[in-house]
Image (cartoon, rainbow, N blue to C red):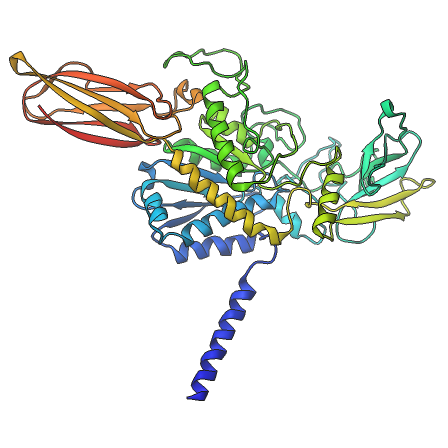
Length: 546
């Protein structure tokens, strides 16, 4: 008996050790992400389907997880996108961690109901070639994929990449003592470098460059390495040609094209949540003159000016979602950052026509004008170490008679928290996305009334109601020829005929909790049905007795 108990305890200990060994202690590389994704498909075969949409030029899979029950395409859906920027590994963790925590709770009544009513499409990492640089022998921040490029237009590709001058395996910074320099050590924290301010009678003392050599002797440093096209610069809205990392044209990359091909066919998507550098969740978008006005349905203006701000109605929705986000995640005000050209989050609203919500998912308090100084102040207070290399003099062949020092902030730390903080962030962002679905547009048919008239006629009146807080279409989407509007159809039986009103019609977007009234004059007796809805707002059918 004692031997049996001892053996049982040994097995428990072994299982505990195995589980502990499998528990992640750092961000996931592409092999580990693949394992996590496939484990979900194996553990929850009735709830998740895993697909590799394409492979990047670097041979990395672009994974998609389709989550829910029943016919996924016929239920309102949220798209969740991680790895939007290759230097933002947290976004990958937030996306795949959302799936893990959601499915782990699938036995709860509320989550079971959610998965029966709505669909999730999750794309954990859209920049796998770039995020792998975090795990490489030489670590540096990278956003581009594996496409070979000639950034300096000298006829050669990849001939001037990064060089590790101090041998620490990380590309940091180098400062060169030079009277023509524009930088000086931060007076508040000399570990960081700031631009000299002439208004404060400051003079620059240093040139500030990324760590490396001018390998091709063209006067530039590290301008032509392995980095290719960035997913977050290769989108169609506000795309800028000739921008480093943007590509020869929008959607030039396999990963961008694969995502577009899927999403443009996914008419059931009503919102996109992306984890990346753009942020309209801690601080919402503001309506502006460049936004869509409340123009009537069908009022489109081909050739009009480019829309560059959210419409007033959509901005109000963004404000409500922002309040929800801040109440759950509680990260405080984020540092202000201008949206980049060709970014994914803007595309999702302006060109895809859906509600688009984006967040980096973590930031440090913006206590100093210099973000590096703000980070170091936070790290010191939290006891976070291993994020900074003290400045150290090195011999540099490109500056033979000058003092050159290498050091500064480590790559990735400004955008990615220590991994021991990730699980809490994943939990909060999972809670946020789940609560977001409570606001989904949802079509209902209410106040069904019939009025008997002479001659065997019946007047049927209904209200088509949006029970959700989100509109059935954004105002950008409402003016699109591509998106599916709410359709209303009267399905008559034998001997029945619609004399007034349309058998089938589409209606304009319904605001959150808004409705429209419809009526028909119908000849005949018996029962008929009325159906209203679309893929992104759900469908409702009522039976009517004449």
